[in-house]
Amino acid sequence: IGHDAADGAPITALSYAGLNITTDDGIDILRRLIEHRRTPSIDGAPVLFIDTLADVCVGMKLVSPDDMIAPLQALRRISSETRAMIVFVHHANKLGAYLGATTISGKCDLLIGVNPKSPTVMEFKIRVK
Image (tube, rainbow, N blue to C red; front, side):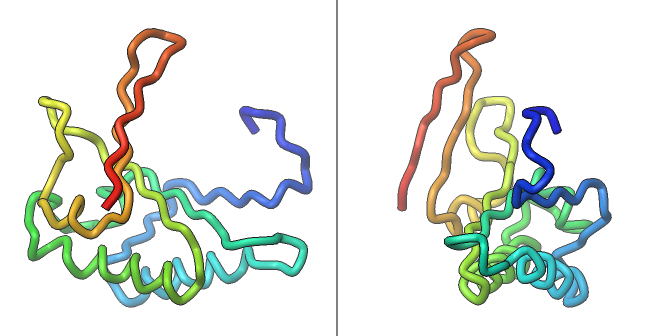
């Protein structure tokens, strides 16, 4: 909407839906949402953005490796099964480092840090595993 995309653009948004990927039901809903968007007219794999990880890991402590292992494994499994790229927004701590358990950064294939340098310039720091 903010970029005046055409009505037929292959984009679906789900906002404040209360999705919880720490439950089997939440994982199943996420998988079905990805599969629902797959059509023959869309070439390539779907891309899913989750903003933020904390909003879909209800009741979990982001700083606890034990709490974060299962949701991150579930995201990796869904990505593999659906061929979807899953991107989640996860805020940095006050020092600019990755927030939460090391499990979070350890399970990611790619980490991108984004820092505003001015109102029109963004700095990206990329760490590939």
